[in-house]
Image (cartoon, rainbow, N blue to C red):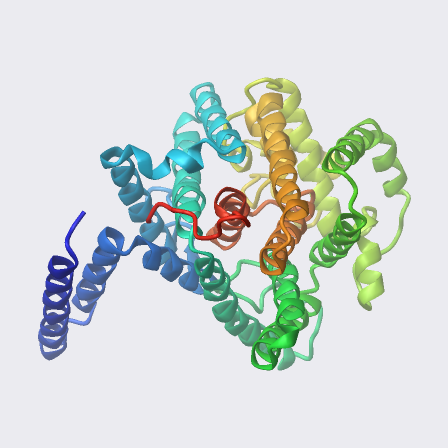
Length: 481
């Protein structure tokens, strides 16, 4: 679009302007305005090097801080959400100027499923109980999906950018883990502080544990791939150990179980079962859970264990709904979600509306010490129930179809390719997604940048490898970001 010489000239001018403005604002003690030169650098990256901006955003995500109310009932996560919104606008603008830029990625079955999912969010927003909330929810989904899925596909046409994306998140996240473990250590690794020592970077230990779990398979795959290169092996092992320590001391039972499920999926993949067999097993499991839901809840109610004590007791308490407050509250949220779904089974109550509407659907028998009469403290505690409640049966079916397609295309590519590096990237990414999709039965965090960016980015990695990696001709012509 622009010549190299012109771009270099513009770049040097911006650097000069950056230095002069910073010097002026520093001299005048106008520290707030010193952010303006940094904003100019961000604008430059957005226009000329969007790939660097996406990596930069991934680098910032672990350190981002959420502000629940900045006025007029709006919350914002800084500094990432403004950058995501700007990146979304730039990508839309690029797509309008050059229709070919997204043409290959848009034709992929996973991309089509995601577009269908977004379309249904829009349709269900039109019938929403709170249309304004639902439209805002849709926009928030777009500023995650457009930059890190559609933009991610373009970014990952260069395989080295996959590593950059992963390490851009892993390294600062290791810093957050170190900060959290230290704060936990000075409090004697007590159970109660484990719920909040990761603040302000994470709201609580559940989201913190879920994100750590996503990267454990990725780092494990790096360790096994790098075993013949001592420096890279030690580097990857060092970060894997940090993440494992963080995972253990997160006291997040669902995260522990999700890693165990990922290990089970790894074994199944290594057994080389056909993809359609895996899809059939997943579908059968979903149907079995649906049919046995009521008896399962009745059985769980008889369990009398609490979420205290050692690691084994913590894992066991996932099924303890009679005395463990977090599980009791989870059942309260699920019960309210199902009541809401029964009122609006097709279109749902509207995307993003659960937290605003669930209070009247709580049963007094299900209230816990952490429940509120105003219903103002959280979500449905399940990605799947949240979608069912807010977007109805079609929304959930589209979501499940998307998941099946991701596994189908990812595993088909894994079994097809012989290149060890590509197989490693696919395996680590698929298992990382598996941890979150498992965790999603008990919590939902895709409204937050910490989870949404790796989630949609991981999917983009699978799609990019499926589209652009060709063993017969590895140097295939690829579109630029």
